[in-house]
Structure formats: C-alpha cells, structure tokens
Length: 146
Image 1: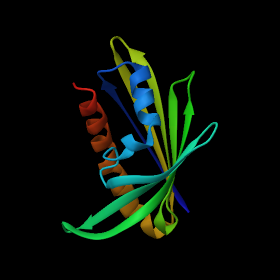
Image 2: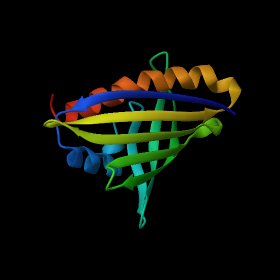
Image 3: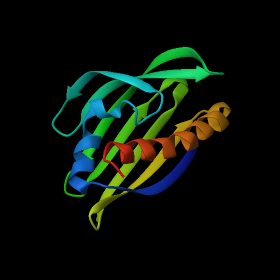
Image 4: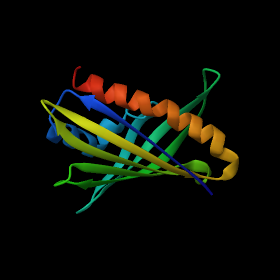
C-alpha cells in the first residue's frame, strides 16, 4: 500500500461553530466531494456518524460508474475538528482531518488528506485528490458566502 498526505488551508466567512456543524452533517457531504451525488443509510452513534456516499465517476465526460463509498464522521467538539474516514473501492482508504479555528470574523479551515491505496492506483488517486481539494474548499466557501 502507498500513502500520500496533502494539506491546504483556506478561509470561510462564517464562525468556526457554523463550519463545524455544517461538516458534521452527512447531507452536506454532497457536493463537497465533487463526485458525490447522494448520501444514504445514515446511522448516528454516540461518537460517530456513518453513511454511504454515492460517487459518480466520469471518464472523458461520460458517466462510467456509480459506486458507494463508506464514510465515518468523527467530530471532536472542543477542538472543532472533524475527521472523515473513507473506504472506497479498489482498496482505497482516505482520511480527511479538518481543523477549524477562529480567524477574526471568519474561520480558518486546515484540511489534511491522507490517502492509502495500492501502488498501481497511486498516480490516479493522487491526481484525483489534488483536484478535489481546491474544489472542496471552493464549495465550502461558497456555501457561506465570500
């Protein structure tokens, strides 16, 4: 298995509490990952929330496959940290650790993506992760206004 870790930081025009609450809600995952078109089977537990996200993958502009990915959200309220643990197809596993802090009237969001994958998938998965990171930041920022 190969592991890649990537991070980025951005500002959101909202309070850290609002961003935290938004990220803890599985329904809001649709669109944060540009390939996710739906969520289902939401199960809330004492310290986690589990759900299935439906990912639509496109190749050459044509929809090739729709596949489920299994996600666990682990919120840490005092630290305003939200961690998504993701199990996808092909042995790909990802962890998105999101730290949310106050930055004046806004929130500073630092996301660290750690992805494990079979060596044969390294190039494609790394490219996909790099492309998804700014889109996720752009979408979250847009949801709260600029």
